[in-house]
Image 1: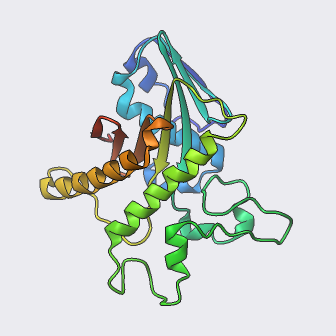
Image 2 (image 1 turned 180 degrees about the horizontal axis):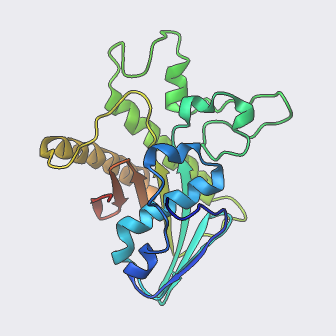
Image 3 (image 1 turned 90 degrees about the vertical axis):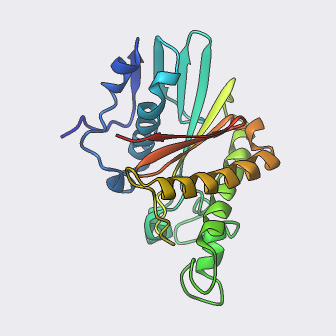
Length: 245
C-alpha cells in the first residue's frame, strides 16, 4: 500500500528525488481518484503533477495546502499557486446533495436543503439533457469537439475564480484539470502507440490555440490536464506531454 492520503500537507524537499519520495502515489490508481473526497482528490492531483514535472522546479522547494488557490509552492525565485478542478464528475456524482462540497464546476452551491441550482453553461450538461436525447458523441456529434468545449469551459470557469476577491494570485499560476472523462470514450495512446499519441497531440494543439485566442494564459500561466496515462502541460509557448509512471 502507498502512503496514506492526508487532507493537509506540507512537503519540503532539496531535490526532485526527495520530493517524489514524499508524494505517496504508489497505492492509488488513477481510476480510484474520483472516489476520494475533495481535499484528498486535490492532494492526489498535485502529487501526479509534481511527479511529472519535479525536475522542472527549483529547490529547495516547499509545497503546502492553502485556500484560493488550493496549494502554494515556494522556492528561491519561485512562487506558484496551484488550483485544482475535477472536470467531469462520475455520473454527475449521482445527486446534487453529494456535490455540495465537491469542486466539480458542474453545479453552483446548494442554496438551501433540497434546492438545486444547475449551471447550464457546461457544454456536456447541455448535451446530456438536450431534447434530441442520446449520449454525447452519438447522433453525429463529434466527441473531440465536445471534449474541447468542456475543457475550454473549465478554464473559463477558473478564470472567473482567480479574478474573485480573496484569491491569492501568485507570480505564476497553474490550473490542474483532472480529465476523468466518462463519455464519450476518447482513446488515449498506450506505450508505443505513435499514431494515437500524434492524434492526441493534434487535439491538444487545438485546445492550445483556443486558450491562446481566449487570453487564458494571462490568468493561468499553465493549464495541466491529467490523463490516466500522461499529463499534458499547456502554456503560452505551446504543449508538452509527460508520461506517468
